[in-house]
Image (cartoon, rainbow, N blue to C red; front, side):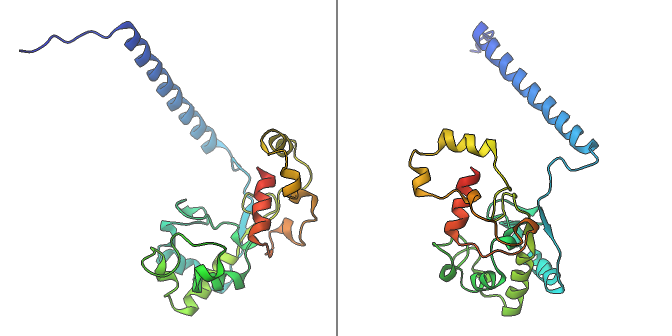
Length: 213
């Protein structure tokens, strides 16, 4: 025996109506943003990362793609965000560090790695690549630079920031100033504003992130 279809109740109609309005507004906002982005003559967001590849860097870029490193990493604004974005890493890590990391990840990283390292880790094949190929990839990554103030740079933007000060004042624990040093009070390393390689320890990089947040 079939039952007659029950009409929607007033509350259900209101709920479905609200959901439909939100979906409609989201679609309109997306179309408006994409239209605005595509009609602009300059980028919507300022690009703070750059590169100037050497011959070895060009070779490393090709090997990086052929090895399907972009399945996890993002470089040159291509790839995925499953792993670390490599744009700007060359301003934080030195070429020597990158060469050593690719050869033996867990011996050169501050903690256990997720994918890089011995089998059965997914990226175990990297350390098994020919030494000259790993070196070229390391050169490629080392030439991905970031200007000071970029989210991937070693140093935050020059000068004070009301936004950073307000966020620190609102969310940082009371003993934050005693436990950490605000990296903005330290002198930026030479070449930081041009995105030149800096030797930055993991602790310093974490402090920079804390200061920027």
